[in-house]
Amino acid sequence: MPLSDCRIINLPKVTDPRGNLTFVEQERHVPFQIKRVYYLYDVPAGAERGGHAHKALEQLIVALSGSFEVVLDDGSNRATYRLDRPYFGLYICPMIWRELVNFSSGAVCLVLASNLYDPADYYRDYDQFLQAVRNKKPESGDRRGES
Ligand code: TYD
Image (cartoon, rainbow, N blue to C red; front, side):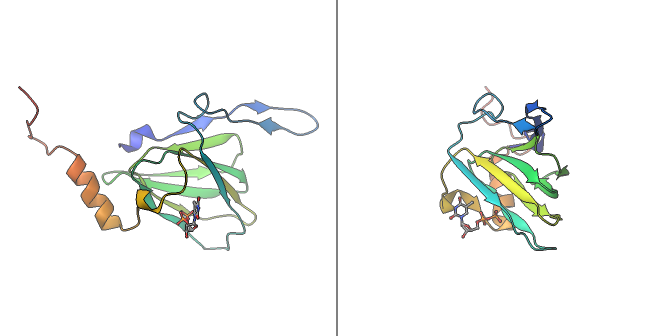
């Protein structure tokens, strides 16, 4: 799917002198049913996470604390998002290679996911990912399917 399907989603923020509150509701703030939640924390300086793409999984990534950058790549284009507020979520559609880099000290990365953990849903090799993207994309000038 194209990078243009990925986007920052503004999550609701209930401000309060006692402390702020943000919530996420499935199919309202994220365009999928939330089947799994996981989080990255205690990420050492200089470490990189991600380095893979998912065949079908959709995700919303939130910097609950601290900051980090998410580099997205659909096989043709790249975009880098810096996440540093707990009320911004980055929606990632299927078939996007992602790298999570430049974690600040104490960063916590929350991930809401549309399915349970499934190793078969991963592309962990960039060349295999590129090949899969290119096989799905009709070649320019390919008129198959037209009558
Ligand atoms: P991985 O998806 O490679 O982490 P990241 O993309 O965040 O860098 O997963 C790292 C390890 O954790 C891998 O051995 C699989 C395991 N894992 C689970 O068991 N369940 C999960 O929900 C996730 C995300 C990972």
